Length: 67
Image 1 (cartoon, rainbow, N blue to C red):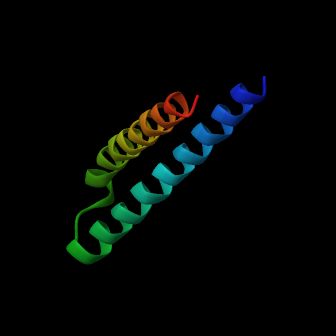
Image 2 (image 1 turned 90 degrees about the horizontal axis):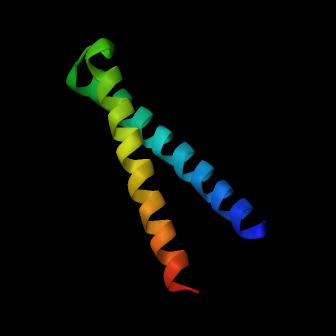
Image 3 (image 1 turned 120 degrees about the vertical axis):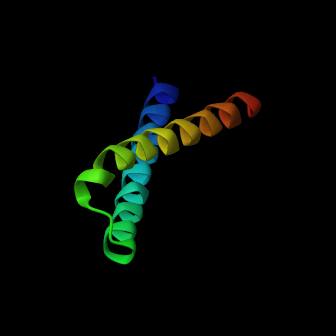
């Protein structure tokens, strides 16, 4: 049960980090490069999903190696 809780918390933190990075990237591109928000919304969600997936894979690989 403790391992499941640890993985759940890790996943939620990874998801929050990915969403924060995606928002920061969208903000930078919108205000610095002049892209419209509607053009960025889909790309920001895809970026957040990719970052969350990569962080999750890395976390699971590290926990598997630490056993």
